[in-house]
Figure 1 (tube, rainbow, N blue to C red):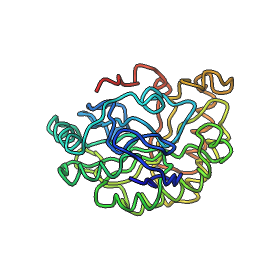
Figure 2 (spheres, helix red, strand yellow):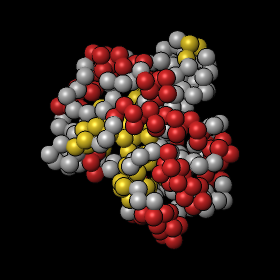
Figure 3 (cartoon, helix red, strand yellow):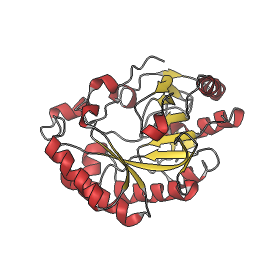
Amino acid sequence: MICNLCPRQCNAARGENDGKGFCGLGVLPKIARVAPHYWEEPCISGTKGSGAVFFSGCTLRCVFCQNYEISAERKGKYITPIQLADEIKKLESSGVHNINLVSPAPYVEAIKSALDIYKPKIPVVYNCSGYESVETLRGLEGYVDIYLPDFKYSDNALAEKFSSAKNYVETALRAIGEMLRQTGEPEYDGNNMMTKGTIIRHLVLPNHTKNSIEALGLIAGNFDNPLVSLMCQYIPFGRAREMPKLNRKITKREYEKVTQTLFELNLDGFVQDLSSADEKYIPTWDY
């Protein structure tokens, strides 16, 4: 496969288990965990959990990634699209509210093949960094019911410094626009579980409230009535521990400052509790 799935447009060869592109990944999905997940937004996790499939590898290199063992170190096991379809079927039969594909971007073609083999009767969630190709997203129309994109940065220089992502801001805004086009207004079932829609996530970083405030402003200025999930779960991991400005959790004062902006902009959605910044919420990569 010659790959141009993500905005990097590597045009690089990818074999089954490895590749020459930025991500270094092959085309076969590499899986780190498949299990019910209870720590997403209330309308995603509900009472029965979200059926999470955590993929290894990433199209970003965030210095602070909590899941660095699977994103950077690529811990996991290769499976085929047929096996992925079986895992989706098993998750669905366990009673979860949806199928939550976490960091799926490098494996879009294999995921589509798996969903062609078995399309669950519950919503399919595409849980991603926001650094996505509009063309690739268009190919997912009809496969995905709910998008959970990050919008990490309001400053491209910061995005390049912390995530090795050029042109992150305009790229993510275009991608989120496509996601919103596909899903339209949020839809819910009788139990207030989302069945269709897009939730834009933003993680507040320590010493970077300006980035967060400006990111919320960009969201409010570019999209009509978007749902926003403001997150405070940041814990320093990986290379962030070596960076003085990132080597701590955010403070209550920092979070209140950003939260106030969320309210002033009349952005609807979700606000995490500061207790979310706890390692106990990080899954075990045990696939």
